Length: 170
Image 1 (tube, rainbow, N blue to C red):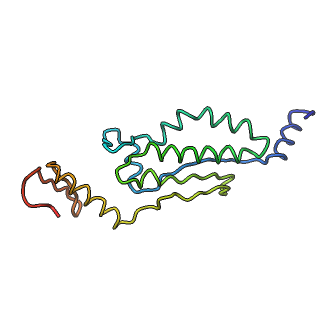
Image 2 (cartoon, rainbow, N blue to C red):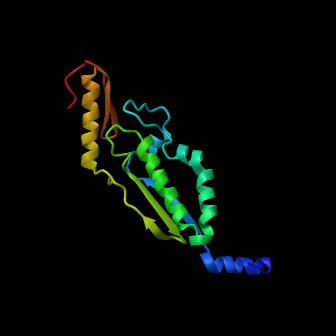
Image 3 (cartoon, rainbow, N blue to C red):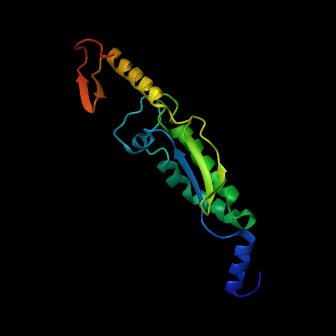
């Protein structure tokens, strides 16, 4: 490609387009942000906090290299899709596993100039309020049966029942 810098940039824009392209991976559960950010949480069934940040920081150079190698072919669309899907795969491996819904909730997307060019729905839809309450009751019973203190909220007030005291809280 010969010519001035401006002519070459114009040719590049004609070939691949212009604007902003974004790959993203959202984990769409009510509690996902808290599970991701709170380093004090324990995950006895596996998984960890920072289940999106860690793979992004570990792999960002490879993502950028992939984009740089393919941007002149298709504007980087395929590389961005691979990046979003890879982050979704990382969520499946690294997200807390207690019930399995968080690790299946990754929603990879690619947008260009605000328009979705790739949008794969999560394998696990956002849990309903009823499903969340059921999970909470299961956790409460597990703690009680293990002889641990139980906590829950009712009307904005935290209720604490020490292990082995009083009647079952359900």
